[in-house]
Length: 219
Image (cartoon, rainbow, N blue to C red):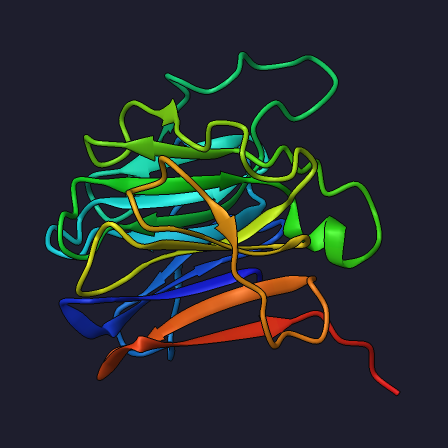
């Protein structure tokens, strides 16, 4: 299981993404699941993002790009406009992270990379690339301006709940922060023991508080 997400309007509805099985939906808090892969051409689901208001809209990040549904996964379409062209023998835009803006949910961000392979010491295909859509994931444009490390694998994106200008991204090169909706970026790593960061979370009750997880090795 690569990814899990709850429906923000219905806490009994759970979405699961697998590494070979595609997308699954449960409406009874995980007791039973239904597979929904009609139109999904890549079954390695790295991340799931559910529209905060219209929960019929769901985006999946896969190694083969972004897939979008408007009917809770009954049908899927690949959304490639604005990303590099499809390559024959390599992934042109593997998606490592997705995030809807909680205050302006028509805006969604996508980060490039293969986090699982980067964690295992392989080729994470990082491009230091962040994309933005203003139409719930139909069309995209790159916004990072080449300011992130060119081989950074983006594994998580979070928008500050009370200030959409502030965006944080977790990468294998550290956390980066933007205070202007992604126009400019700077490292934000003071106090971290190393830079291989993985997941971020704003505290809902205290949005100035942020949590981050880092890659560790069992001893």
